[in-house]
Amino acid sequence: MNKGIEKAFSEGKAFIGFITSGDPDLETTEKIVYAMDHAGCDLIELGIPFSDPTAEGPVIQETNVRALSNGVTTDKVFEMINRIRKNTDVPMVFMTYANVVYSYGIEKFCQKMVEGHMSGMILPDVPFEEKEEFDTVCKEYGLDLISMIAPTSHQRIQTIAKEANGFIYCVSSLGVTGVRSKITTDIGAMVDLVREVTDVPVAVGFGISTPEQAKKMASQSDGAIVGSAIIKIIEKYGKDAPQYVEAYVKEMVDAIK
Image (cartoon, rainbow, N blue to C red):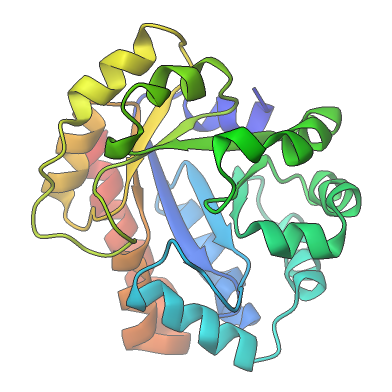
């Protein structure tokens, strides 16, 4: 396991927050990273904008559109990370799509990740059976390619878990990302299946927006992942969002700790 991810899960339940790089602009994204770190966020997922983010609901899709129309590129995201690293060592992973990494060059992408002290990546459009091409290079560079399991994975849950690195992203509901009023999946049963074959941490995401939901999901796993709810705050406050994101993240961290 990459040291950054190990650190994120070493102090009890982990709170993981997702933001899209470059929404509303890269300067604000940088400030939001500091705000989340200051609020006690254990791990930050940074989205690299992509034109066809198939796993995302409308809220996060819109952030991709906004960031791309602002001229955000993968190189500019890496430049931002190098600036961030002068001020914080908060563990960070990328959440992006296979095409972004592939078109940049998998090897070059991983090299840049190491330079920016990134810990790993999540590629929601790469099925378990096709991960080898990315996983091999990640391992060479000491990075974790993070696996996802969903309620529909059924008998594949343990197959995926056996080979998982870093942490396992447990998708709490069917469909795409977005805020849910209630989460009905039996997360406990999914985590129990994982526990039978590995001690890699499991964090639950998709749909969590309230401190109560975060607390419940974290009580059944090793951590909670929140994206759309943070994005909505950024959408509402724009360049003034960092202070509001900090207050929200602090509330969520307090709930799960």
